[in-house]
Image (cartoon, rainbow, N blue to C red; front, side, top):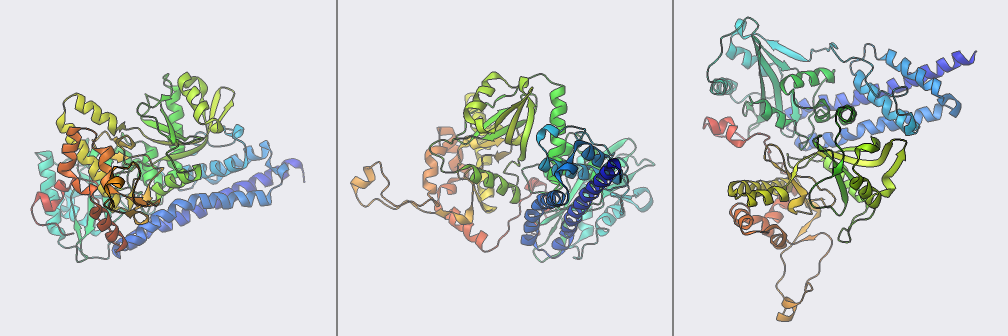
Length: 590
């Protein structure tokens, strides 16, 4: 056998191993996601949350398995440049009729990057750009279903949308809820437009499952206009189904897909079809975020980095140290023209921080696995990121080499950062409050303080204690929502011990600068929160109007008790005022 034919066999074997590894991954991912409907029918809420956590690890497990298989089966000689270039071509051929080619390409990259040095990370060897189109991939069943009100009537079409999901539980009163939808649409549009010949309702075939809800997502098409909608389906207290509201604003639908919330479970054969449909109703939502929210985090990272490199080619500003108070654990920088921040773990922490690098990484991983209830920013984690050195300000380069020299490497014109996290950029809450107070905007101060307290409260109910509750560790989103983003001290609520400060035994003890009581690492004294939270009279007044109980140990202890009993609260990713029970006064059913 000639060397050429031998290399062909090796490259073909590599391609087959990679496709097999990816197919196993997506088979397990799809099976777990498809079971979400059954868990919804059975009201298996805790099981559903565990499934979301478990699913996150699927990808890394399959990459490791595939990498080990290749290393076991191949010799060093067989890992030549020509063999891998040929393997990539063979791999592309195997994706011709594949249902998830873009995900498979990312899987190829992940395995390759485990085996080779980053100097190989260019388009000859990996998929820097996609090679297989995701347009018009057929799915069985189709990605979305169509309904035609001109034939069956608007009311009956809407009703059939929900019947066709085939949930095992009966509806409490579907006709009533359909009437609420019709009245809400009329109120939203003002005047119902004339029906065009092409009038249709398109609905994604799978519901989007998260926590205790199933979200039906679709759009109505009438003439040249499209009207997006989302309807959350919930359980009544006695286990029947009801439609809680209809969301008709595209920006409110986009909030459902915020990275500060848990990932959805969706039964989809062709993910690109779902992303394309979602983009048609949320054109400003990056595809990277949509893939991530569908539970396909690695694809989200791939697309994010492609977008970043594309942006760098079409911009000229420099990365700078992020404005705000410098952190003790993280060095944060940003590119002003790009709406994200980049965070690296410092080599040496501030003296007040009792954590190490591994602990910080575990905390950030924990955030991906819990219900973020719209109050914690998700992060994209990257290794060996190459960015053009000329795009870094000298101040930032000096800061990087001072604070994180162990993570820095230079390769030609690029700076290599060996490990970093990337998050959506928000205005730090301390700067927001400072600006609002200077401008005399008491209403903004009031709302921000109320939002901050709600964030603390909702995180606690979701079994998360932020640890470091300073204003600087929270940000304000473009929709005015307060979100937590500094995770090096977070703990599960159930791992904390909330205590009252005991009375001093005598006057001398009270006047001493030392504590007169023993304190363990997990001890937390809510009374002490006032010292660092109530930093001005206006903030104090607003806080005491809305959240005085956060300084009382009873709130924290009672919340712990509810968590330990297995209680799972409802967190609505839309205003309570929009729920049908509040709009139409029929009484909330859950």
